[in-house]
Image (cartoon, rainbow, N blue to C red):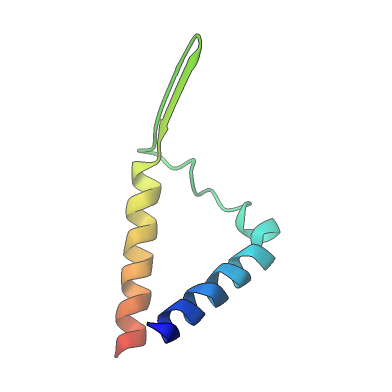
Length: 66
């Protein structure tokens, strides 16, 4: 448990430091992400982005556990 928390903290630290470069990636604006805009209402559901991030994280976890 402690090792997992330390690794999660380090990943968040690296992501925070790399944020100026990470936000240039097209994540969140992929085809398949649902965006509904009405007069006083905006609904955004990034389903394609979530699937892509889930696949990448699953692959990374699988590789690190080997």
